[in-house]
Length: 123
Image (cartoon, rainbow, N blue to C red; front, top):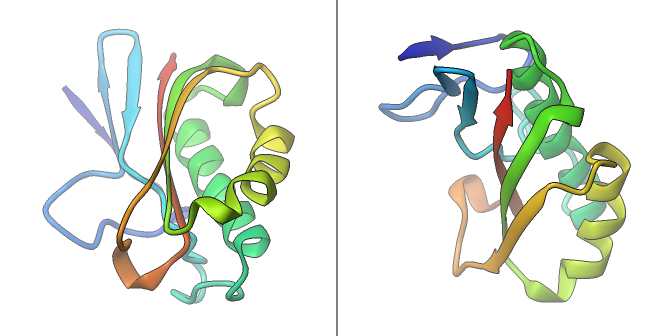
């Protein structure tokens, strides 16, 4: 198992890696909408936060030598399922190949953010 790390996505805030490579697969940790340059959450709306989560995910994919066209599966966590349509409008701008996906509502996310996205991708 090889660990993946980049300063273009937020550092892990716990005992985990941004992503790991196993064989020809990349498995990312969940990416919350924290700007890696400032450590701040960009805005308090789902659109701003979804864009940042996706940018963080893309940065990790690129650090591992792959890209969004190779994403096989995502899991998306929303603090409010009422944000589903707005989240999807952002998500589909980044993952145009339409990988398999699960999307669930959760009671709370780290730092009080509105969304989190994790992925499995081919290398």
